[in-house]
Length: 477
Image (tube, rainbow, N blue to C red; front, side, top):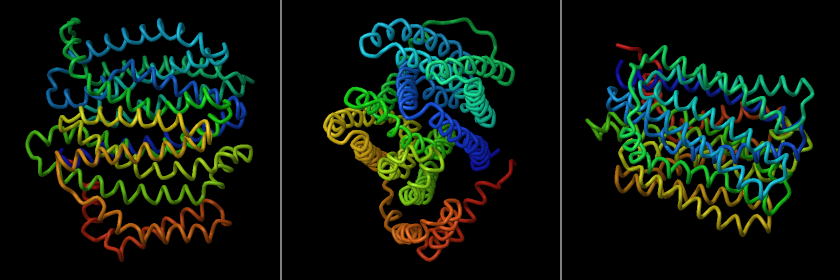
């Protein structure tokens, strides 16, 4: 199977599963938010955010390192499997020994219990991602897609069963999710051993040391990234009521779901780009430029649509009680194109061995986010957090762009944005005129109009349509 066909197959597998996963996540958020109320949803979202931070610390970049290293040298598969598993188990045990001491000083029992169970959910999800990273390294991403889909589906079903049973306590719902994730983790490892068939290999602590040395930039990058994406929730809990966390997270969760699209593609091209760069920088540049092109073409209209249709979107998903979410959603909608580009640029840095710059960017963004949030949250609450998130991500993607531009390839990103201004402006005006229509009709017709307008401005050309068609349709040789 050639490069284009491999990327196409992996992208379509991941995209299909992530679309379904996205719908599952939207459904889960909508149901949980409506059933447990604004305050309960605030606790739920806060606990998940803390769990995400802990899970990233526990992983320490192992899931980022494995696809690159194993893709380059498949013979090290078993070594990385055993050593990586031991590292994650030790770090997980350490987290549960330390955290109860820390959390006991800051949060009441019901919040603490929710955080503990959320940490369990996220750490177990991290073990599933550990298995997924090996399928990604072997470019068998249809299995990765299946495991992620099973994980989210089990969380959804477990939550619905708990709610139907009359459970309204946040920590009990998260405890039920943990039990479901334990079953999924066992299934993931059974899949790994059945399909990839690792040979028996004894534990070698020297390999653990080697992995930890290699994974330091990835780990620090991941920790910095999760801090700048989640620290605003911690600061909101310190300065504002838990309900504001609910409003803010309702907006952010919708954006995170949109982010699944570029995440799918960046995961698909990561092992391929890592391998291509060893032989041909020119081919890697072509892949980068094409990826960024479509990231902007898709990301910008999504941001515009969410901004103009924020009120009906919030009403449809969360209900009228969450109308306060609308101002925050209109602001964070423009994170979509920024995060689309950030995933592609970040993948290029990791694949080309420049992960130290990725790590530097995340920590600078985390520091920037904390400083600005300390000013904005006391003054403007969750809306201030939304504004801070927008400027933090602008800083973040600009840093990525500058590094890739200077060290990898000089490409004209802004010329694409300028050519997209007219179609986006027409889309915004159209959505403003039809805002009284059914949300699905308005969004569908607006996106169709946008696609049509891409033709006269030279964005959607015959050659590009043929190129993307070949990428998607080309079969294995």
